[in-house]
Length: 203
Image 1 (spheres, rainbow, N blue to C red):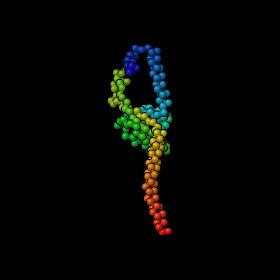
Image 2 (cartoon, rainbow, N blue to C red):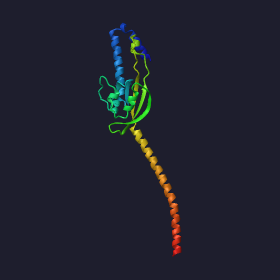
Image 3 (cartoon, rainbow, N blue to C red):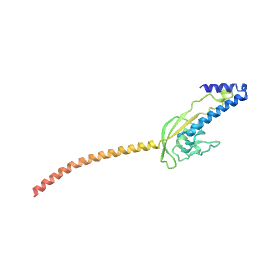
Image 4 (cartoon, rainbow, N blue to C red):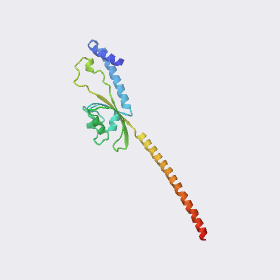
C-alpha cells in the first residue's frame, strides 16, 4: 500500500522532479517488474491474466505449454482464438467471455493425448485506482475487468487416487469371493458326507 501511495504522489508531482530522480524511479520499477517476471516464468503452475473479452494480458511459459499456445506473445492475442477448439477447457473459456466469474478446482483432461489432468481456478482481480484518475485524466467509458486463471497439473494425484480406488475394488472383490467360497463350501461338505453314507449303505 505504501508503494502505491508513493507512486501516486510521484505521478502528481512529476513535472517538479528532475531527470535523475525520474530515471532512478523508472529503473526501480523496471527492476521490480523483471524480478516478478522471473518468478512467474519459474513457476510450475500456469498463470494467465485476461480481460472480460478473454484477451491475453499475460501468460507464463507453463500456461502456454499446458494449453498449446504459441511461445511468443503476439500483438493481439485472444485466448479463445488461440486455444484448440477440441481442448476440453475451450468450453469453460467461452463461457467466461463477457461473464467473468470465480471457478474453484475444476479438473479436466488436457494435452495432445488427453492423458494428463489439469485443475483450473479463476480469481477476479480487485480493481485499483486507474492511472487516468491518478494523473487527473479523463477516465475511459468502461473500466476493464480482469481475471487470473491458475492451471495446475494434477495428473500424479489423479493416478494415485485411481490406484487407491482400484486397490479398494480388488480388496472388496477378494472379500466377496472369500464369502462366496465359504457359502458354497458348506453345502458341498454336507453333500460329500451324505454321499459317503450312501456309499456305505450301498456296500
